[in-house]
Length: 180
Image 1 (cartoon, rainbow, N blue to C red):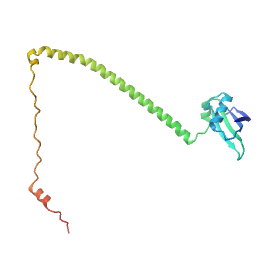
Image 2 (cartoon, helix red, strand yellow):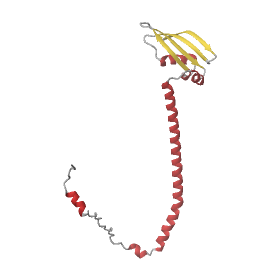
Image 3 (tube, helix red, strand yellow):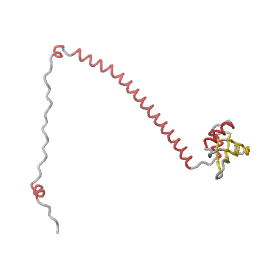
Image 4 (cartoon, rainbow, N blue to C red):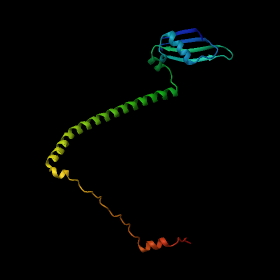
């Protein structure tokens, strides 16, 4: 890919360089290839470059490229018109960032809550242990050694359904009659 600078104009109003290039190549150069060449030659970030056109004529291996090289990303952002797709992509990035921040806050709140619960549990645990120790001391030693008999679970009788009245039984037993 051979590149020749045809025109380079400094536009102080928009704080950019307007560059027209002539590229000789067997295939049409991609935006990425042209952007890489501009980054290398103008010593800027790829965010500060806007490639306007890559034009070629049928059967020709010479392509005309028009690009703007801005001094900073803010200058580019203020000057260039964004497509609907670009605006939606930026909006999505912002929403994702907000969601990530909210999720981080939620995780932080959960960790604080868990730490507080552990702290409360640690404070309550010594009280429970002392109560258990007191109970062990009060209980006679003879009763603890005796095995207790099998404990039978209480048996409950199943509830009976209320019986239907005679009228309801008759209505259920009669075949359905169609009204005339």
